[in-house]
Image (cartoon, rainbow, N blue to C red; front, side, top):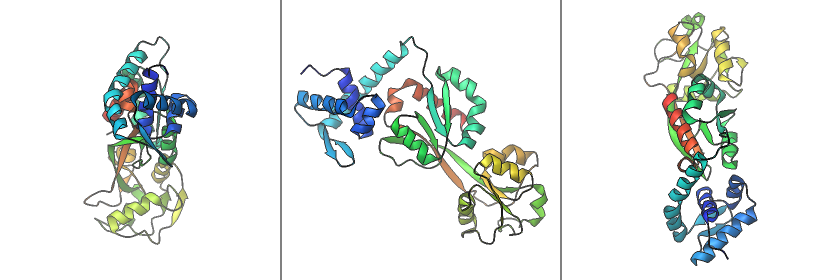
Length: 294
C-alpha cells in the first residue's frame, strides 16, 4: 500500500474524536468503508491496532492515544492553513440554541460577530436534545445548550448561569406574599408547557415542594410569548432574568418573590470533540459567544 498521507491522519483524528466510524464518515463526507479502509491502512503501516471495535463504536488503544497526541495538533494546523488560503467565500458557521437566549443576547450583536469571525452565521433554534444530535451529525458547528450534553464525541463547557425570577404585572403585587413566602394561588400561571417544567423547578428550589393549586391561564411554548402574556396581565410566571431585566427596571413587571438565592441553570457551549482546535472560525465564534453571553 502507499504510505499513509494527510487524509489518513485526518480520518484517524476524526474517528478518535468522535469514537465512531459512522460519525467520522458523515463529518468527513466519506463512505464508512472508506473510513474503515484508511484506519486499517494506518494500522497496517504501523503494525499495531489503533482502535478496539465495540458495539457502540470504537475505543482508542494505547497506540491510538499516542498517535492522536502526536498527530492531532499538526492536522489541525494544516487544516487551518489550507482554510485560510482558500479563495472561495467563507461558508456559514452553523449555530444552534434556544430561540429566546440567542434572540436576546446574540442577534443584537450578530453584525459585529460576523465581522469578528470573518464568516456568515446561520442560526437554528430548537431544544437541546435535537440540537445536540444535529451537532453530532455535523449539521451544526456549535450549540448553546440549556442542559449539559452527554453525547459521545461532544465536548461541552459552562458558558453562562441564567438566573430565574418569579414575575408578574404590577396588578398582581398585592396578591403576592411578601419576602420568601409562596405567592397566593389566586394568581394564575402562564406556563411554557402543560407540565410546568420551569415553574416546578423554581418551586422545588425555593419552596422545597412541587407547586400545588395553581391555575394555568395559558400555555405558550416560547418564553418570549410567556413574557408578553405576563406583561399583559395574564398572570405570573418564572422566566430567565435576562429576558425581563429591562421590564423590571421600567416597572412594567415586578418580582413576586425574593429568595435569598435565586435558582440558577447553567448554559453550556458544545462542539464536536476537537473541533475548536481544528477549526479557526469555530474557535473565533466560541470566543465571541463567551464575550457577549453574560
